[in-house]
Length: 509
Image (cartoon, rainbow, N blue to C red; front, side):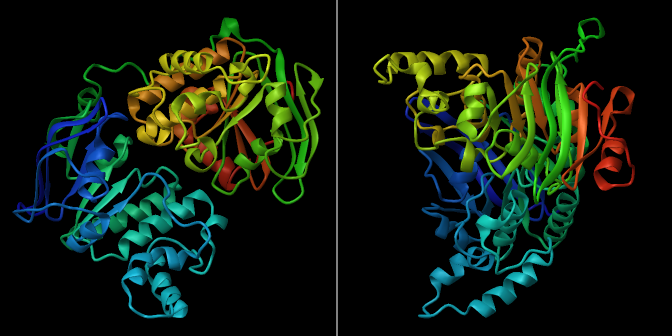
């Protein structure tokens, strides 16, 4: 790591109406370093990165690039300086190929009348080879979220970057894909390329970064070499207080019951899962683990009739449900929180209040079927307070919120219908440590109140810390179940990878 500074931010501020997103912040990036940026959602991290990338313009302050004052007027201007940004949210064009997405900026600058598709695919394959095996001719919308994230990263690697900004790049990646990315980051750093790494995962920060800067409530708090600070020190600086345990106490032994509130029997969808059976007891949180592509999300979507031609029985409180489509599922009290909040979970350009009420407008409508704005606002205000949502006005579009606060709105939308059972797919993806703790607390409260709670997560520590039992899915079947002392990362991965065989859980297990 060199001592010379390539990027220096001084006294930069930015407001969105009454919300002060940045308040005179400072930031310094040295050439060739991997510099972590940490802070709770709403701390101002993404706002600052959008200013550095030319997406937003600051209200005040100064930006120095290689010692010279600059105004970064647009993303194109940022690219010309040598700045590349990989957004937390997927920002690809879904209806064109991987190669066309990767080289879109190059193609736009070209004066050629026809695109050389063969050359684009060849160049794309060379870059993708560093990350994973993705067909450069594949249409982006047909790729799983993890591969779309890798295409975003590969797109940034095609630029001649001096500074690469990675905003929560591993949120949708498998452990193997993440480790590949970390190797690339270290190679780029050795070549003198500077990396700003935004993550809520302390292990990633402390394993891969040279320094860390912490923001809180739109203000710069501190910068320290990784060798001179602890994960607890970073978390305390982020939240401005000592934070309690990340996971609430699990279901106490004296409150456990054998009462089954939800059952699935022999659920089958021809191509994606087969003979899936499990039960959920009152008061517990049930986890679902599995490698990407194992069928874990597809099983839950099948239960809720979101996709697929599904057969088998679904029972709530012992009574069979007749579910034809997701509307039937909502009416029965079964709701699903998508892992892709941007694509499936929210209406980004609609207001916070409109999003919260969107799942079933009858809750905020008059007898004549007209939406009553006062009821809609009150519903959003109540759930916003429960979720500790940070916002300016409930009439603001959801797109104006940070990623973590958008996730809270998506959860609020599920809770707005008073569900009997809620399936949450990656409920804390891209959410900071303080908000994670709040969401975990809320899920435990829901379970203790009798709401069936099922959590799908790629983060094994989350499943182990939060859930009472974990089902492990492999190749569309339940490979086994872990609970109690057997609920370890090693046991889950052995089941998920096929190294250990275990019987399917029984309905009364």
